[in-house]
Image (cartoon, rainbow, N blue to C red; front, top):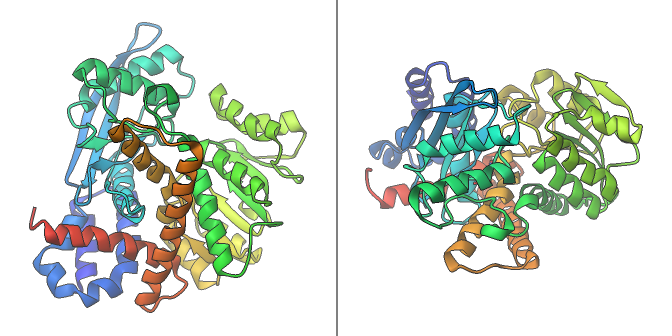
Length: 447
Ligand code: GLU
């Protein structure tokens, strides 16, 4: 049997009932076929794909904490340290009721390639909990974070594994997690990123994922002889990533007409383009209500309950919410609308069949592991600053981020070209990310 097919079968057998993990492995390995065919003997002999698809370790633990009513609560906590070949493990923590081992492995696997693409020395990891921050008091969130760190501190550290935020984990949670780590270990070190500016954070980190995504889009459009100026964008989500994206698109002369939440989407014909509107996204997030309808109520624009914005005619679509938002019906709608550019910003927002359909029908698809790598890239820059015990200015960090995103675009573009798949940015990102990790694994022997 072909090596890729063998591994796909093996991953399914060894990880039953983990569909998101199967999905990402399939997506990545399918596009790596030409690379693997070219090097099959060496890869097989060194069990590269077997090792690449098995996490270095996957930790699951109980998080027991007490709510404001005095009731004991129990959640599951996770940390999946997927691949440490090119640097200390690095990746965010997600607090959301949907979190399980499949989601953690999918995100950790993706993170390995994404981190490699940034060109910074970071291995891949992910963690989190099925804890639902919605409706919890600040004190409950703090107690939960402390209980979570009571176990996690054994596995993380500045030179070992450096978590960060993700869905449900923002500046507040990072602060509580850092405080508890310090209390437990007596170490003041950059063991988590996304920290506040008063205790070791980096300027531009909050904006980094969204800004980076738009820098990537800018480079991509330029390479197609196009530009952001005057283009209409449909965005989903209204969290940190959507916020950074809307800001930068607006600054570069584009118009964002939608954002969405679990309750539906809003359509703002004039664009989400004033300071008041953009700042309101932060207010909606901070309110903990998780409702985008609040935007429609405040600014008097249409709200579409229970719907996603993918039926809207826009030049560029940027899903910024969560995984598997775009399935076949949405993909068909996108193609029918004549959309030219589809840019994944959330991690794996597209099912594999929907992705194949978009590509087959001539939509230019930019993959999340390249597009959203700006977030973790600036996390890497936060680590550098912590190690130096020094801070760069916002301009310095922003310039580095811009350069990193430009390199990611061209490295992906050139990798696809080298294997005869010119213009396939999805395959290019997978190949470029994969190659560096494989080189490091080969050099370090069978471990
Ligand atoms: N959670 C973000 C991601 O998916 C950021 C990770 C980090 O900064 O370590 O890449």
